[in-house]
Image (cartoon, rainbow over all chains, first blue to last red):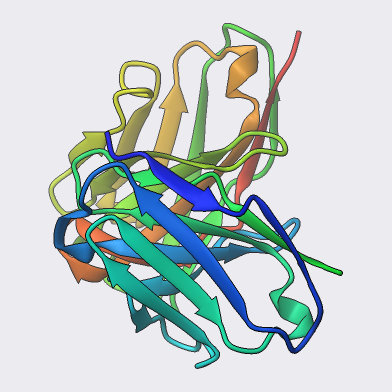
Length: 108
Length: 122
């Protein structure tokens, strides 16, 4: 099973700041099938990025994904008030898919 | 518009059975895999498995296999997740999601249901 480790656990930031979230895999993610999700309290997860760097439909271009192999990054170029949430990475390239434990982005 | 509408919250006792549903609309139900995800109270997301409604192929997380069963009814455009004997540790929100971005079963989900809260308590 591919274990995904996200860091940091929590980020305290102000609107307008740039955010970089990390997701590290215990082994190489097949075909770079790595996705990022945003989850706000009381809501279902929302897909932001798929296949490492492709934005899902309707996702603002301030969200960007990068990486390969075992190291992946989600970048939010400029935090908006609605971006304060929990972010999860997921690998869907292996027969058993896995999620990271999440990174909470909170208002400073 | 693609929509996945899940059945309502359930309160059950340990040992009871349960079947929750995820009704799809706005697309060809048989053409896309559906996945299930668990979220225990205050915790992260856990991948449970996926099903292809067009052929009822399934792929389970070994951690859940044998305890839950995924199924789909093409005539009703509905996917199901069921338990024959619930445990208190099954208390969680369960989400279904259409797998869209990718090929075959290795696709990221674009649309999610609203979640079904299952509470198991004596």
